[in-house]
Image (tube, rainbow, N blue to C red):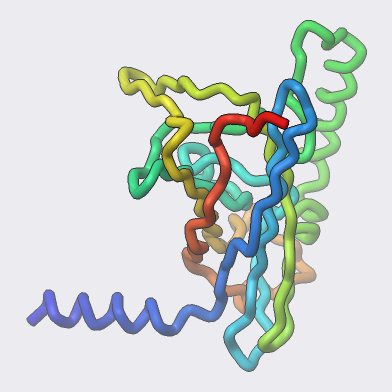
Length: 213
């Protein structure tokens, strides 16, 4: 009896999601000789008759191995129907891979000062992550990924190779959560915010061999 009740609750929650997360399309730019650039277009749709508020940082996206406990969306990569636990496939988002040989002391000081400023403005950072979607409304997002065309990956003792002829898919998940009480702004009523896990469709992404002109 308890088992049937559990199945019923899970089924009910699946049909009562207030948000829909969908990847619309992915464009590919192969003009860079070093990295292939993917532009991912996705959106959130409010399925309710009420405005929805939630906390999330859509300025970036992280692999699923690093998505827990953050306000970032995270992604998974599949080869055919198999999830690849390879961590980060991409060398960056919205900015190219950092070349550590070009870093100098001054630039490190600037980054350190930015971290101090960040730590001292937690309330502002929280408020910047607040997203509101009107009833039946849609919010659209784009994110650029940079892939250095590397096909070999190793995660601990497991080795992976992105096959050129296989179909690959990307999936995005958003975990909506309320902030810790220590970082809450006193001007925001966080009881009105939604919580939950929202997963997109799997969208084809091209890790195939570069097409010759």
